[in-house]
Amino acid sequence: MKIELAESYGFCFGVKRAIKIAEDNQNSSTFGALIHNSKEISRLKNDFNVTLSEDLSDFKKGDKAVVRTHGIVKEDLASLYRQEVDVIDATCPYVTKLQKISESMSEEGYDVVIFGDEEHPEIRGVKSYVGDRAFVVLKVEELERIALQDKIAIVAQTTRKVEEYQKLTSYLIENYKEVRVFNTICNATFENQNAVRNLASRADVMIIIGGKNSSNTKQLHSIAENLCEKSYHIEDTEEIKKEWFKNATLCGIGAGASTPDWVIQEVIEVIEKQK
Image (cartoon, rainbow, N blue to C red; front, side):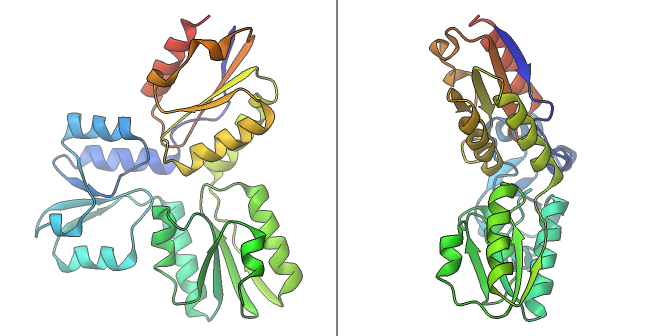
């Protein structure tokens, strides 16, 4: 059985930047999970004493607080500054751009439609930059139930599928007078998705590596599953099953934007032994 890595996989620019920021700020604490990969978060804690906090009250004056890659709610950020915490912002620049666009459009009187998962930390943060006319949706059917004004701006979570985003933008353009469309899906998402799409179309089995709560990894698995029936989303080597590879001649491997190289290599080594 041949093992082939997707042409584009693993850490994106924003995650690499956030990891470097965390490593450069030892003995700090991230507000929320820095990235959606528990293995890498454990490494940062063990090697750099970068801990994880989900509670604003944990931070005291002078403490170092690293803002996670996905960003945080606007008021929480303001609260950290009020508490005179040393804020180190590791928010992905693509997410920061999304926040600023949403805030600007809201201030100009546009309804802001946000394509994404309302429970995802990135979207909770983005929504906080909009007034009371923010609408988070995943499907056209949800849009049909919302009474929108004539001036609409639409943005997307940085890790969503472009095909699904196009369905929403097409619906709005067809039904409303003024629609501002912003392509806020990041380049790494496009590249990783296209790479998985190309590989899954040829593979007998696909392994997608990444955190179980990672949005972009879930999207990669969904793409792979549509093209290769035997597609599996795993977080580490413990989930690998020998029977997945029975009679397979090509095993394709993709990885989410928060998946470190060392985890990918561990998975490859274990799969090698399944031949």
